Length: 136
Image (tube, rainbow, N blue to C red):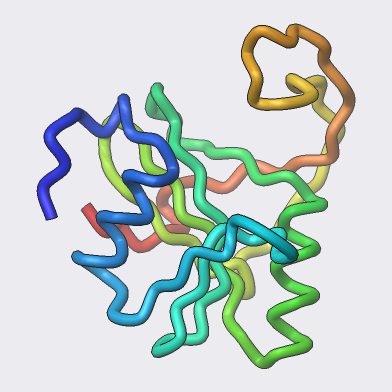
């Protein structure tokens, strides 16, 4: 599926649409309601968190609380926890069970609402794109 805007302008809805046509066969949006993950693919049993970055970074960041949720729920239902990031240079899929994490504290915006400049300490880890499967 071709989305007319560049990857640097994509939102999670754009990434979801592209994945549902170009990569996954039975992708379901789980971002609304009870689930804390963004989507789930029935065929592959991938429980997925999506992130879109306006700038490219070789080292992407994942929050420990999102990682922990994905891993815990995936264990409960025998799913595979997946983290997918888009950047201006591509779309990267990380199989979280295959990665060793080094957690550290970092001051980051409290929310993705950029009008709110308040920062809080979050526990995060870097994931290098070399640990991913490049989808695009």
